[in-house]
Image (cartoon, rainbow, N blue to C red; front, side):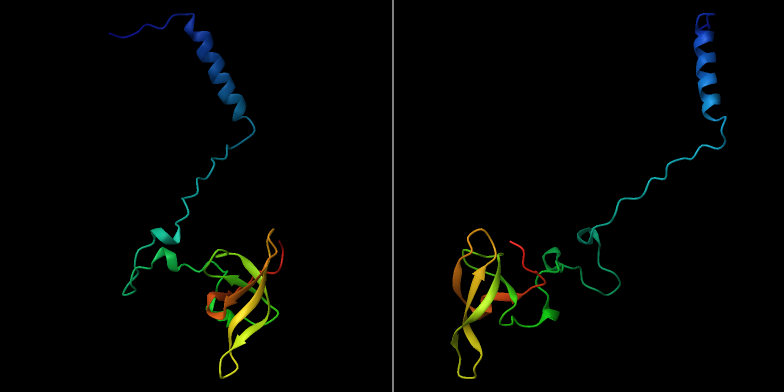
Length: 133
């Protein structure tokens, strides 16, 4: 069974053809380029002899071993306790070991609480944080 075209359908088809031809009258039509999806580091597999990485080990730029130990007068990030993940200013040393290294330090949180805390030196890390609240 084939459908017969009626005369009523022809004006619609001519109108569509005119529309298409008018769009192309100015020259070539650019076809949008579809970018492939970005591959996140978690989806990457092991390359060569490298072991597969743990997504939890991805460097977030906040705690970085290249920054060195926390320094008096600089900003730190609290790693444990009630204020875990908060940024703070390293105000001073509360307790020192026999070699003069800090064991307990005083920090002021850089959040709405703005509280002064005494925290173990090992429970803070250096950070690239620059001071906003």
